[in-house]
Amino acid sequence: MTNSLSLSIRHHTGFTYDGIAKSSYNEARMTPITSASQEVRHAHVAVQPVVPISTHTDYFGTIVTVFDIQEPHSKLEVEARSMVESRAQMIDPAISWSELRAPTLVDFFSEYLLETERTKLAGSVLAPLDEWRRIPDLHGCVDAVGEYVRGQVTYLPGATSVSSTAQEAWDIGEGVCQDITHITIGLLRQLGIPSRYVSGYLYPSDHGEVGVAAAGQSHAWIEYFSGAWTGMDPTNGIPETERHIFVGSGRDYDDVAPLKGVYQGAASSSLGVIVEMTRTH
Image (cartoon, rainbow, N blue to C red; front, side):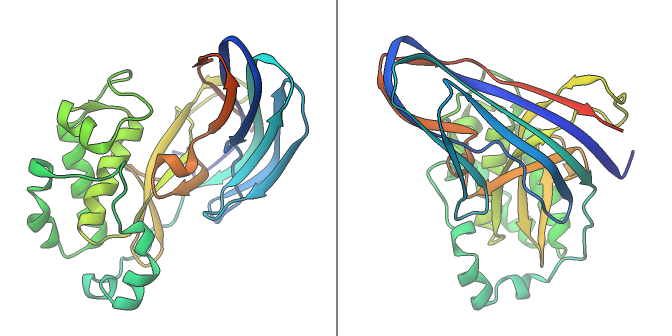
């Protein structure tokens, strides 16, 4: 496995309307950010219909592209292109459980310890909590939680919807990366481990050919606080690697949805999502 990747990323999505939308207001969170494990060399977002766009960084540190369409339109298309140099993260030894439970730390990370409607869990899913609390190492505890969720929830595209909750996915025993991430976050917060939802892209191969476009994925994984934010992909059972391209993080999916908005007009349906990722060298 390589320790770094240079990637060109194309993410295309949008909506089509059963008629005409008179106007719409939209926010796109599709632009990777520069961080300790990746450097963004170029990023651009294009919108059809062509309208002025503005950009800001939200409360959670995610880059948001905002655009307001006041002309009638039957379709909305958004395409984000970026070039990113990505490196594997370094995982440091974890702090102790007692350090994690210090009142100042609990207060500082309170928004990543409280359940949301997306991450709320109850019933049998919580049965192993006491067992996990006896695992001395935080990293080992998080790995055990991820293994438990993967063992109980089968990855099955189409089993859930974008609005599904962790409890709903757990109850049917099926879901996608969004659901597995929500369940894992819900359990970690029950344990008192600050955790957040990460939205980004996953390059599909350890040995992709340079210059050949691959079908990438819009992907979700977690970061948990172990003295530093540490990435873990519960769907695939691996740490965050150079193949994981970070776009944004928040309390759950609602904070980092790639495209959301409000509009006036006929019902809409998604155009679907295309993610192409190409190694550049």
